[in-house]
Image (tube, rainbow, N blue to C red):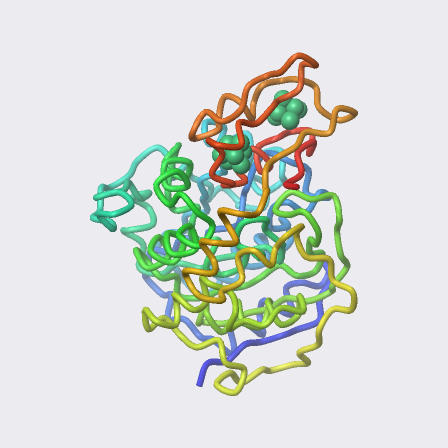
Length: 356
Ligand code: SF4
Ligand code: SF4
């Protein structure tokens, strides 16, 4: 039976929860090479809660040092908007300082590994990920337009450096298939422990939404499927209807059924939690219905003219070149080309794009 810890916390006393996580999920770290992977979606202020809070990272680094790891690497590959600005992303978020000198740009060196031929025959994974003895993943409790939520499994998408994230979005071609891609990337190297920053979470139009939610919790588990099942339940979702959790269960990575999970703490649904717009599109009915919904739903990005600065970032990074700057100097989408990958929403520095 998998266990999930739910522990009250603030950013001032977060080490109490972190210590409890290491007690319940002990890791023999003495003499081991440890990689700690926060969620560093992009360069942003810690108070925006787009990334794992530095207080959580700091407490984990302190604990791993105390347990005698032979080497510690703190690293991530930021999303498309900032994949060329790894160091700056860590500095701006405060995660560089919290790394206590263990930061490494893990996007600089990678190894090629076989992948799933129908998506890409091989992908590059950060060498630090593949060579670590132990990986500790530090996801952020957030919504996500394409996967509904981002937690333990989705945090591993950051083991891919550079523009591969966009290439895989394109190769997937639909939200349902993208869920499969996320699980396949996760399987390349399953982390050993997950400690989720749910002190301040995100709801609404994640993963870079301004709608923050005071939750006041740290969550932990050594099983990602159980961990994400608990997060989904807190968000008011039925875990078994999330396509990526179904895929993960089929792959033998764990079980989302709450009857198979020992919850240490109090599991409560967050009242009136705001899910992403049209998040139901990616809930699993079956593949045929899912494809039908996808093809008939007009789910396309739309820039808010009051917020858009016309910077063109979204246009430059759309993996299928579906965007262009229109007459009013704001991006226009070609509905027939757009694959609803949500990359433009994720990358927009002004948070000007919503999926409608
Ligand atoms: S929508 Fe965002 S990324 Fe696109 S042009 Fe406007 S401000 Fe730039
Ligand atoms: S327009 Fe946006 S949602 Fe559509 S394919 Fe391009 S990046 Fe993805």
